[in-house]
Amino acid sequence: MDVGSISHLVAAIAYSLLTILLIVSWRGRGAGVVLIVAAALTAVWAVVAMVYSTPEDQIAPVLRVAEVARSAGWIAVLWSVLAAMRSEEHTSELQSHSFISYAVFCLKKKKLQTPH
Image 1 (spheres, one colour):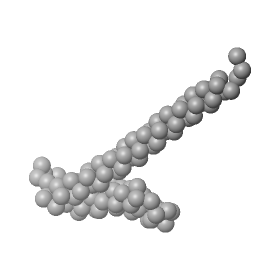
Image 2: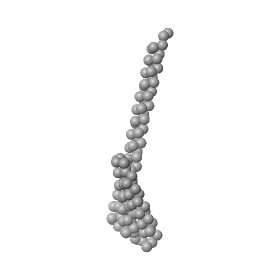
Image 3: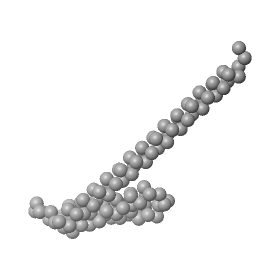
Image 4: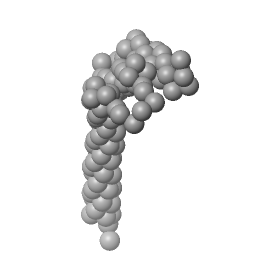
C-alpha cells in the first residue's frame, strides 16, 4: 500500500465518522441534509480514489464521477450557507427598517402631543 492509498483510507474513515456523527446529531433542518450528503459523497470519493489509485496519469472514469459528485456536494453546502446568510441579512434589514419606522412614529406622536 502506498502513501496515497493510506491517506485516502484515512480520509474515508474520517468522513465516514463525520457522516455518522452528523446523522446522529441531525435536528431535521434542510442545511443538515446537504452537509450529510456532502460528507458521505466525500467518504465515497475517498474509497473510490483508494481503490482506483494508479501511479499512471490515467484516471478511471468512476473516479472522475466520484470527484464531480464530491465537488457538487460541497458546492451545494456553500450554496445553502450563502442562501441562509442572505435570508438572515434580509430579515435583519426588515427588522431594522421596522424599528426605525416605529422610532420615527413615536417621535412624531410625542411631538404632536407636546403643547407649544
